[in-house]
Length: 70
Image 1 (cartoon, rainbow, N blue to C red):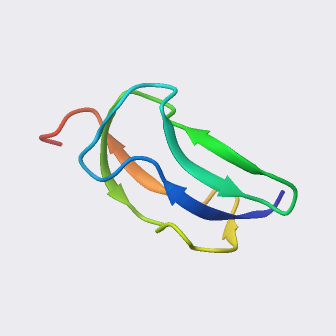
Image 2: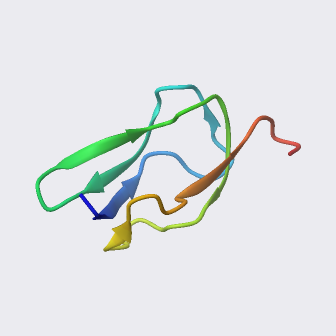
Image 3: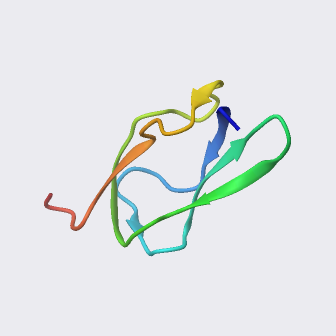
C-alpha cells in the first residue's frame, strides 16, 4: 500500500483518547480498515480531513497531545 483515503474520523478535535481507540477509517485499493490511537492523550488537531483521497503512507494525519493544556 502506498496511498489511502480517509473515509471518516471517529473522534473529533478535543476528544480524550485511550490507546487502541478507533481514530479514523482508512480505505485502500484492497480494503477499508480502522486506524487505532497509538497512545493516550487528546486529539489536538486533525490535519487530513475525512473524504481526502490519495494520502501517502507516512503522512501525518493528526496531532495528539498528552493533556488539554498542551
